[in-house]
Amino acid sequence: MSIFVTGATGNLGRLVVEALLEKGQPADQIIAGGRNAEKLAGLAELAVHTREIDYSDPASLAAAFAGVEKVMLVSGSEPGPRVAQHANVINAAKEAGVQLIAYTSIPNADTTQMALAADHQLAEQALRESGVPFVLLRNGWYLENYTAQIGGYLEFGSVFGSAGDGRLNAATRADLAEAAAVVLLAEDQGGKIYELGGNESFSLAELAEAVSAASGQPVSYQDLPEEDFTKLLEGAGVPEGFAKILADSDRGILRGDLLVSGNDLSTLLGRPATTMQDAVKSAVAQLGHNA
Image (cartoon, rainbow, N blue to C red; front, side, top):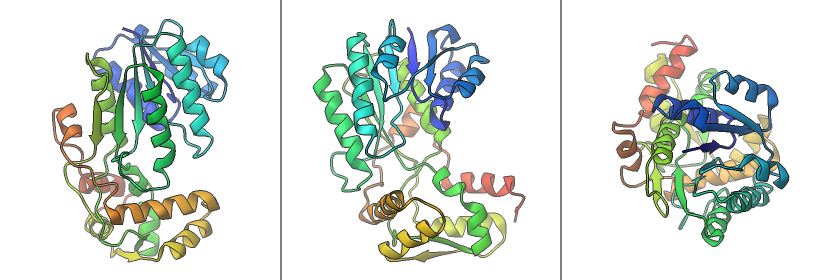
């Protein structure tokens, strides 16, 4: 059973490849695809096959998917352009006779009002219209969205946001990648939808408390109006359009758009998902700020 992982040169895609190997998928039945030739060479060291692809280049996709049974479509990273890119991948998979597409979507895609969700909603619609069997991996917010910023939280003594007391249950990329591998290796996944998030929800104020506890330094949550948070992000170097999307996503947290119900992630993993507190402790330790 050949499995093609797109976006394999990115953080999530590579973890999916590694998880497939750890779960016993033969390396010669894994194809890792991406644009970055240097990173693909690194993946080749794992003994998997590699193929250069570009979501914007249908010809590269058609050639890459020849003989492939399952495709892991890791969503593109550019809001807007990725709508056409996803369609290219789906169409190429259909033409190649792929038996299953697993797509990394967004939580509560049927109801969410987040601006970031629009591209994912269109991708889900394209999958439904394609006639190709598909499974939706509606991945929650990455815990790394926060743990990667811990150095800044400690520097300023604050977690900034616009989420009020809203709650979310984010998960680590590694946990989400392992869950994807489980789904890809399972049978009869066509038509299934997995809402994937951690077992325990938290607010950004609780995130700040966890950073304080792990580091021994006072860190508090500073809630800002959406416009002010957007300007803060822009001042930190985030492009204007994406800053607006991130601030809007915080308002989505306030509405509960990123609060995942059920235990799909831990069920697939066969264990509890990594907690926010443990992820924070690990990130703080790596920075050398143990309490």
